[in-house]
Amino acid sequence: MTAKTKKRMGFGLSGMLILATIISTIALIGMKKPAEHKTEVDNRITVSTLEVKNTEIRSKINVIGKTTGKQKIEIFSEVSGVLENTPKDFLEGVSYNKNEVLLRINNDENYMSLVSQRSSLLNLITKIIPDLKFDYPKSYENWKNYLENFEIEKTTQNLPKAENNQEKYYIAGQGIYQTYYNIKSLETRQAKFTIRAPFNGVVSQSTIKPGTLVRSGQKIGEFFNPNIYDLEVEINRAEIDFIKINDKVELTDATTQKSWTGTVTRISDIIDSKTQTVKIFITVSGNDLREGLYLSGNIKTSVKNNAFQLPRKLIVNNNEVFVVENNKIISKKVNIVQTSEEYCIITGLEDGTLISEKTKGIHNDMSVKY
Image 1 (spheres, rainbow, N blue to C red):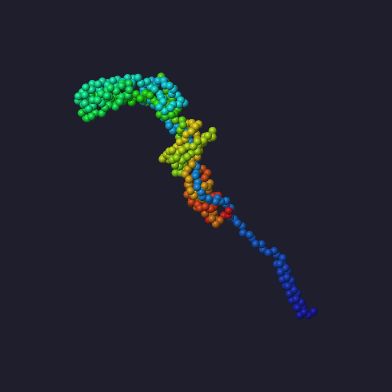
Image 2: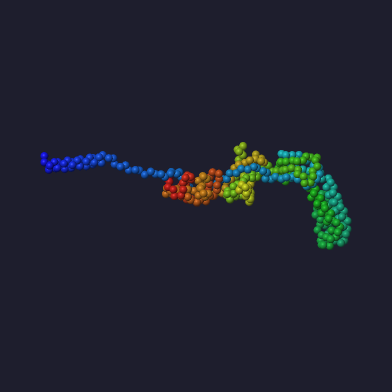
């Protein structure tokens, strides 16, 4: 074999080897699996939402308090003397009708002084009658009739009016006016020896018994109307603007489950600096009520239009909520109308607004799904 032939054979083998390599490479490439397409991962958090549906809302404010007698008085003696017996003993629990005698203090001494002064007045008028007949004939008949109708045992009537200043000075000079007003003073004092019931009620405290000495200014007891009570309660100052006089209150005794309807009758103007609360007073009446009874209930406040109630925990930054718009979190300010322990009543959001029920771990412009 010539050198030329060997050379050609070498080129041929090299070409075949290259061709085989190319074919093998193509085959291997054909056997490779196509590159897999990676799916994008959605890292957005899922939030539940609350849809706003504005409506008319009559909110309720929870209250609790203790009943005290609305008509309740302490009885003090304005005069001194020995307490006398009366048809009813002035003892705790005893009932009286209006104007019925509660207590009677012995008035013998005062009465004798009163009768003595009336007798003096009678004598003074008797002495001036002859002079009046001649000096003041126009007034004579008036004074004569007054004298004829004068009764020592009865309340002294008003004196006749003087026709002129000269007559008035004459009457005054005889000591008639002075004696008359001494009598009226004693008559006023005389009435204080008998204490009458100012209204239908019950004795709630008695500190004295018949036969004992009563001193002027001494407390004798307490008297109250058992049919009407005040319930004193404290309201958060943020809620006080929603309570009005005559608002109705449903009240319940937790022990007996009995209920009554009360009415807001007074609202204090003072805010307690420590508790930031305001006192209101609810008047309630009915059967089975007692003083010192604890009652709880709800005040039905005025109606609020276009309002929405939501859990209090959804309020952030004092007056904002997180809403979902176009799959993004947005904070919006709201007007808080009323706040209770669990709920808030708000205005300022349109119907259909979606409020995020998640408040932690989210922020403005955060992408979410729901």
